[in-house]
Every structure is written in C-alpha cells, then in structure tokens.
Image (cartoon, rainbow, N blue to C red; front, side, top):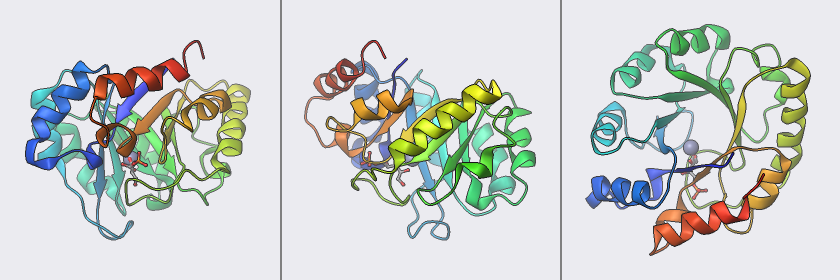
Length: 219
Ligand code: DX5
Ligand code: ZN
C-alpha cells in the first residue's frame, strides 16, 4: 500500500482549487491539510474554512493534521467541515485517549502525530484505538525541511509495536518525503506518505506522483 498525500501547504494559494484538482488527476490518494496555531508551532496557517473549501473541489479523502495546542474544542469544527482523517499531536493533548474517542465518535479516522523528539512510549497504550500514526520526520511548522534520519528507526520500532499489539493502525510519515527518501521510508514500514514541496514545487504533478509511486511499488 502506498498512499500519497500531497500537503497543500506548498500549493499556490492563488489557485488552490485548481491545484487540488490537478493533484487528484495526477494520482494523489489523500489531500493533507496542515492546520497551525502559532502556539504549538511558530506560524499560523489556516483553519476549517479552508478544509470546507477543499472538500468542495475533490472526492479524495481529506486528511487534517492539527498542529494546535489542546485541540478538543475545535475538533468538531473540522469534522463539520468534512475531514475524513484527523491527526492530533500527542504533545498537545492532556487526555489523548479522550481526544481520540471524540474524533472516532463522529466516524472520522483518528491519528496521532509524534514530533521527532517524542518517544513511541507515549502512544503505547492507545495504539489499538487509532487508525493511523504520524511520524514527524521534521519539526512541524514549515514545508521544505530536510528529512531527519532517526525517523527511520522510529518507524521500524513503531511497526514492531503495531504488530506486537495487533493494532490495525497504519504509519504515515510527514516531512522531507521526496524522491530521494521515499523508498527507505517505505522499507522501514510506512504506508502513507505526505509530500508538500516534493510535489508542488515540480511542474508536472503526474510525473512526480507516478515517480514517487514507482519507488515504492510492491512494498
Ligand atoms: C510540516 C507539515 C508538513 C509539510 C511537509 O509541519 O506537517 O505536512 O507540509 O512539507 P514537505 O513535504 O515539504 O517537507
Ligand atoms: Zn502535515
């Protein structure tokens, strides 16, 4: 399984609808939307209004990555806006189990993201409750950063934990995913690949997405 999820953070916002339609036509599987609050991460990006607008122009699942402190109060807004997947950061939720239930109770798939410095121990007891795990392979906040190599070992350890616990969660990797990194990331055990600059900074999305998929074929 190789799910390619273009992150619109690197899209051209003067023509966002067109950009989304173009990556859909080019073979994207999910649309990844990065929500930033200017607290948990240094900058502010966009909120549920953008999720709602994106939902209107695509049939692809909408994958909302919440980089916000204490997100519980605002999760219903993203559910109403049409999110199909919502990930929250383990670092931002005091009662992570409760937050996951809040998402799942609305039949939205729930994910938990871990910063590069966060141990996988933090999700050990909720791994059977979630649909996906997001390994941050950069420090969240910006597109176009360099892939942090220690993420590979983390993915492998998470994969073992998933197998040991009999969890159905899949592993998503976010940050620095591109032509030179995607294969080793897939080999380590990831199934969903977020790519922002590696897709939107190229001129032919179809060629780029096909080439990324080619690198992980059969894995
Ligand atoms: C980083 C975001 C990512 C970002 C990835 O905080 O969560 O989704 O858009 O960008 P690239 O693929 O350019 O590293
Ligand atoms: Zn993201």
